[in-house]
Length: 435
Image 1: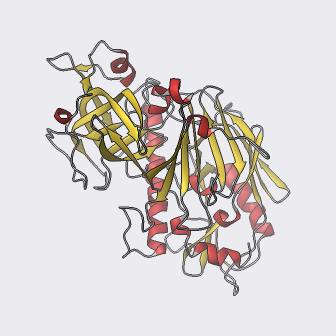
Image 2: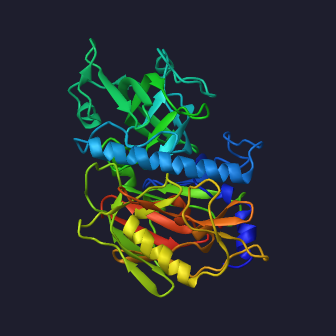
Image 3: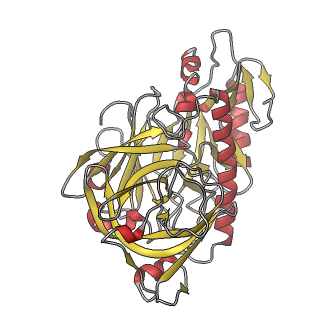
């Protein structure tokens, strides 16, 4: 990298997509095309913004959440016994994109954690036996004309993975997270509305009457964007065709990122590469096949003896986690190519760190992730990040278990998920510009 890295790292905390607030609809169509603006949780536009935190504090918090989320993902994958299990695969503190939606008739605004690692959408509801503190009023099902409890014999109840039933034959969901957070309540159908008036009737969601854990008071619940049958991506398939995409801005903390659904989510044009989505359990996760990583012209192959689907792509994890043997090869190749004084990370989180040069930057060769059928050059600014004053560290992390392709290395790509074609597409894009 060059001195350009210094100016980029000055606002990198605004680029780490550990949380985004969906705020306004900018496009819709009769074919289900919807595009919505995104704002990072640490931008001044976000209700989660805390001006008292420094950029390094925000960075470290995002990294801490990445490790916590990775542990929860691994724990839930290990204990999953059903592809439709309602056991959520994440710590809710890790999946921190905030998505504004409206529920009910008339529509009532809710602000949920939009997460590709969860399936069931739920929100805190009245009457509340036990609720965590939230900024917005609790959703009141008695004040909407379109709320309908789901019966225990319904397909939605079966898809939720819960067998609980109350005395009125209403399906009762139970979602538990890897960090012991939970939400219990009634499964129901409601009208879901995006800003701008695009509505979808009879969407199954959880009306949470007993909720506890590490949920921030900004959010009302979870918006499930995972691959399971109860997620809104699959519930709205007839309208959006199983398609969604996002484009995560890099260059300006005030620029909006985008998330799209349906026809607006198609990734097409020059330089598009695609890789297959691999079916594995749990089907919430989006599994890809990573074949290797190159540092400049030196390639380090991933041992794919375990088969395809060896890494999860996750928009809610900041860092990228790779197997230890792959990490060691990448670090070795980088060390041969790097110049400068290697130092220890003061907090011991990262293994490979350097003092930043007098020009405020360090020199690093291009790093390319080789997915099956898709080679992605990782954003230059995201490979080494200034984590403390004058110290820059490699943002790939060795993992003994689960591999995750994190959002820090997805910046400035338009990334499209097609659950019908079973593929993920990538297009190099300046995501700060109108698409």
